Image (cartoon, rainbow, N blue to C red; front, side, top):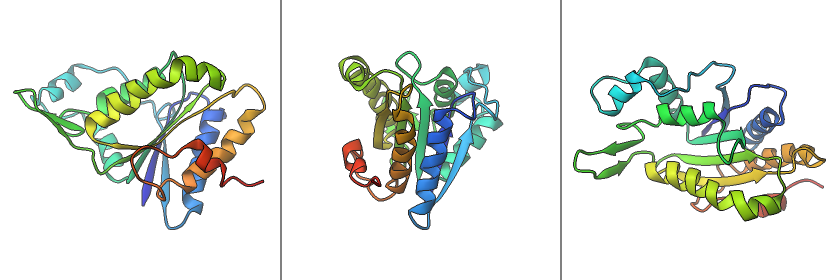
Length: 211
């Protein structure tokens, strides 16, 4: 099976990138599976939803070629992994724009003139890994429910995709950073082992960590 890991961070030496690479290594070590990292910052993905995207949304014109390429990358994958720093309770703008443009009407979902909705990504497993500077208590009080409603439900459930892992790796400005790279490797190792809805609790992954 194959995982497409989309990472959004301008610094290739950041913890976000280290977590993405570690997840990919975990996938490779888990058996006959493969992983591809799509660094959309380095690739220069243009995030702004434009007139061509709007015309494609209304099914008036074909999708732009760069969007078709992104959709083809996802179509080749069994799992989509998003690794990102948390900016203002959400994705970075570039990753949000990637979702806005790539998850298009007619590909991610079908919106009929009468308002009925068809979900088209039911085959896709999704893993979400947010990198946050605040502590767990802050996320539990403020961020967690809001972000899961916005992202897990609002984006992926809308398209029928199954969110298998949805985790925040927190306290990144302290000593926890190194442990997050190890955790990401374990999450990658489990990417295709536990594909049931509801996500992989981080506590369950922690039981499999070395030492």
